Length: 229
Image (cartoon, rainbow, N blue to C red; front, side):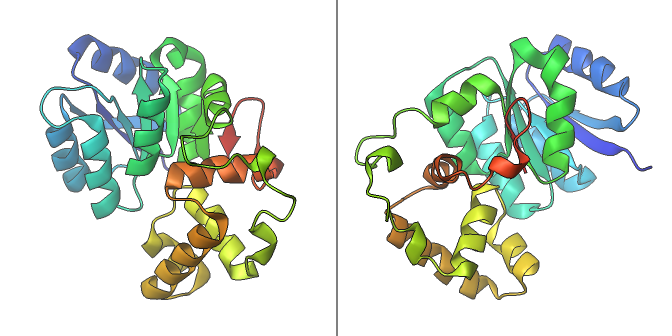
């Protein structure tokens, strides 16, 4: 069985060493590179093409948010899992917008990290349980809570293909990945995506993730924590 190839990005050498030891002990994982900042993370990701990048947010130089955007744009098959000390709604939203598909707190590294890596490698979204409650909490100003919407909130007006695109976007798939998955052109995917955002009155991917959670579109695969395939 091939191992999950990991790139670790954190500006603290002690943290990187600890992660290398922890993850290296997993029989299905190997750390193929380490980066001390976002710029180096992008450089090594392009060179090594890891399966998963374990990414800190606050680093010197290019931060984890910008590095995630760059990696996801240039390497759509590489997943990014955030490992941070920040249990913060704004950081969570910004990393989801950047294309991350997992968010784990450093305080839970011993119990959650390996599980989260396997989840995002399978193409799932993994959010630490307390952060799922953040997403299911208050929407940002100007966004209507689905709890306050009438039963016909726009979802029933989506075509079957728009519903498929909605689910894949919420799971962090890029337009190219959705096109490949559904055998469509990228332009067609962009059209579907714009149309469903308009019908649902949503403006961002983090809003789509929250909408999908509230709608129960991902419930079938939720495990004891918040792994959302």
